[in-house]
Length: 241
Length: 241
Image 1 (cartoon, each protein chain N blue to C red):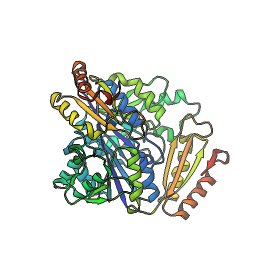
Image 2 (cartoon, helix red, strand yellow):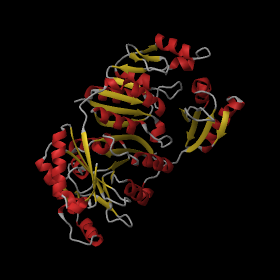
Image 3 (cartoon, rainbow over the protein chains, first blue to last red):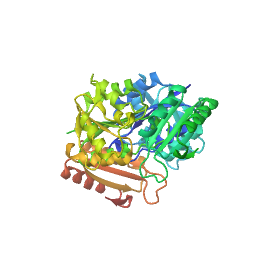
Image 4 (cartoon, rainbow over the protein chains, first blue to last red):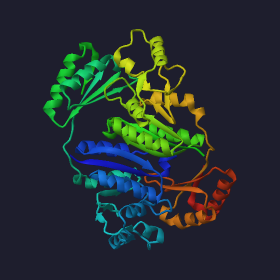
């Protein structure tokens, strides 16, 4: 089983100026791959904060992803923070400069060169069609904040992240959560390994609660789903997915 | 100046089944109020994790908000976690039971009573039109995960949170980030207290970068904005907000 954490770096998210859509994207993608995303943390653009949080996550999780802070301007401090996390310097990466020069129609200025300053010893993963690679330091994968690039880059290296996917069943129920809570508790006593979620919805016309049943064992989740359907009142179930 | 942190509690966010829209809502609202949101952390439904993170945030920030995990089912562990954070027990709150009984058309079952189990000594803030109040323990404000309720509850008690609001100016620029980086760095040397954000956009027809200039001092941000406009090439500016 593989675990992961995501560090979102950016004042723009905390101040509500930009909406973070990389987190929900990564959550969905890692789930499909069977990697357990256990923590999402959003912090501001400060080198020491980036360093401390990256190091802490790197020690606990198999994979750490960062989002944001790798552009050419003053508030792009992710590379410095991650270098500090592992006690490394940053240096101009020759292969990145070469790549940038091939893609660019004019000489590189200092701001563009700043984007090729990465931690010493980092791994550089080529991404087809983009001049900027994915930079990896230890188990930390450094992604850009721009969602189109985040997604494209993730898809290009997703084969590196694998686990055993969950099998998910969804039941949409017309009863209120408090009226089915006893039935859910009984189900968990019979299927203690089941991951059971109960999510009330208001403003839905046809159901009041979405139940999710998950396990990495398909037979187990199917038996649990059958048991739950049997135990709920027949007219309580709006839909099974 | 007031600071805040948000703890989002829920496996459903980490597994990508439900999208967290409370975080962007709160980020925008706190910004309007002038409260600095400095950290957003999403964790799974585990009592010790909730306890540890709540306690850590409570010590550092003026206000802590939690989202999720206060319903009637097995995976609703927020009240237990927050009680443990402050070394308190949870107990049935009589005034909440009374309120629930007034709103309900049938006797309370155990699952409904579970929702009235809150940490000893908690403050209970009435929210007009909802039977479920906002529960406050020390500086921790406990909100539901359901966005409609989160928003309604926040609006009902927003007067408790106040700071000095930021004045924000936005410039939409046609040049690339790396071509204006030197101008931005010069601006920061002249206006070291300015909060300057630079956000590249791809797939926008009319501009390539959104610049944000912020300060709590309106005269300062206006002088900085004028200086920046003067220093950028005249045809680089698409729009000023």
